[in-house]
Structures are given as C-alpha cells and as structure tokens.
Length: 185
Image (tube, rainbow, N blue to C red; front, side):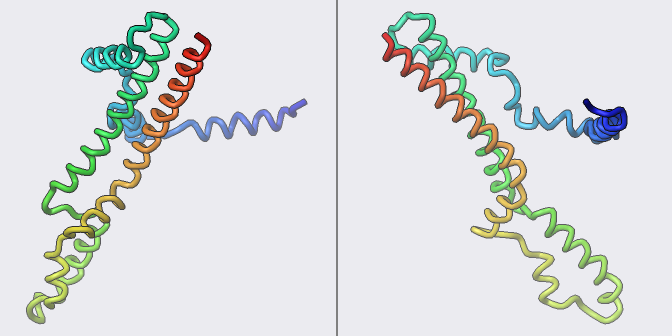
C-alpha cells in the first residue's frame, strides 16, 4: 500500500509538471499541433474527402464488400496524409531556399554582436577591416545555404518526420489488413 507521504509527493510532482505556466507558453503550446495543419482531421476538408473516396475506389476496384471498402478508405486516408506531410516539408524547404538573403538566426546574432563591439572601436581608429566587412556582408550560397537551412529547420523537419512515419505505419497496416481480407475471400 502506498503511504500518505508518497501520495502527497506524487501529487506535488504532478502539479509541477502539467505543462507551460505562463500565458505565452500556453499559447505557444496550443499552436504546436496546428503548425502545419497536419493534426486537422482529413475529412474536415471536402476536397480531400473526395480524393480519399476516389483513391479508395481505385484501390478496391469493383469489390463491393463493405469491409474491403473500409480497409481501402484507411489506406487512402494514410496515403493522402503522407502526401500532405511531404507537401508541408517541400513548402518549408522551398520557401527558405527561395529567400535570397537567408541567414540563420545564430549567424545573425553573431553579426549583430560583432557590429555592436566594432562600432565604437572603428569609428575612432579608421575603417573597418576588410575581413570583418566581408563577413558582415556574406550570405550563404549553394550547398552551404542548404546545410544552413537544414540545420535551422531541423526541429520542424523532425516534427514532419514523425507525422510521415505515423502515416507510413498506418498505410502499411491498412495494406496488410486489406491483403489478409482478400486472402480470406
């Protein structure tokens, strides 16, 4: 039997770990699930609902068994979800790649710090050194730009990866269930 002391300690721990405490933290946490609109039910969009039904008809063919139609709908839902995730990833990366002056937050902070430190020093003693001016005016290009974007967007890409793995898993199990239903015919 659990002691009263242990119960009080468990309750105190539970109260201390119930998520963000500040209004700002709660607002941020509330937006987590809707950032890419991937947590929204797929049937909330009428266009996607029609695509799912059409894809399910293509998968199941002329089979009119209610069980197989339901299994085909599960496969189609997972496939459409997978497409939505991949589109969100494409949008995230292509938007950053299209930005000609893209710089990472870290690089911008380093540049701002350098400017703050050098303002007083170089005003009095002459022009800014060429190396410093080159660094401040530099922008990532080519493979370096892609690497910078991937590093900056890694948290968002990781979240999208979790959505993608979930959709792939749902699709795999739905396909297996449909195959099993066809074998039991």
